Length: 222
Image (tube, rainbow, N blue to C red):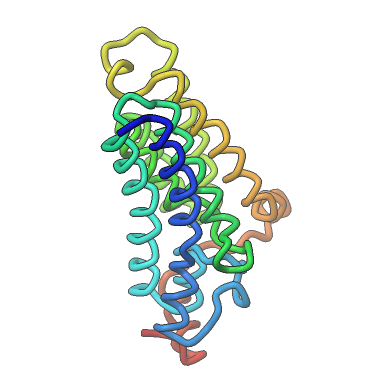
C-alpha cells in the first residue's frame, strides 16, 4: 500500500478504534450500569471489576488490549516500512481510549491498549513492563503498578533504540519513541489523581473478593 494512503487510513482508524467504549458497552449489557458513574469513573478493566465483576473485567481487558495489538499489527501489514506510522498508531489508539469520541471523551487510562501496542512493537520492552504487574500484585495498588510498568516500558524502548544491540534492530527503532514518550505522558496524566492519593496514603488497594461482593450487593455482578 502507498505510504501516504496508509497514513490517511490508519491514523484516523486508530483513534476511532481506540474510542470504542468497550467498558461502557460491557457494563451496560452485563449489569445495566455506566462505569463512569462508579468508583474511579474510568471505563478500564480495573474499575469494571469493581463495578460489575471479574468476568466482565476480563472481557474488557481482552478487547481493550486487542485495540492496541490489532491496530499496530494492521499498520505493520499495510505499511511495513513506515515505522513512525507504527509508533503513532499506538499513540492514537491510547488517545482514543482515553478521550473516546463515542463516549463523551471520558474513557479509560490507556494501560490495556498501550500494553497491546507495545507487545507488538517491541516484545522485549513489553516483557519489562511486567515488572509493573508484579508491583501491582504485591502491593495491590493497580495504579502504582500501571505507572511503573509504563515508565519501564518507555525506558526499555529508549535503551533498545539507542544501544547498538542485534535485538534493537528487530524490536525497537528511534521512531518508536513517538509511541513511547507520548504514551507514558498520557498514562501518567490520566493517573494524576491516583498519584495524589498514593502520596496521601488514601489510594484504594485492589481486593478482588471485595470487588465481587460489592458488584453483587448492588445487583451488578455477573
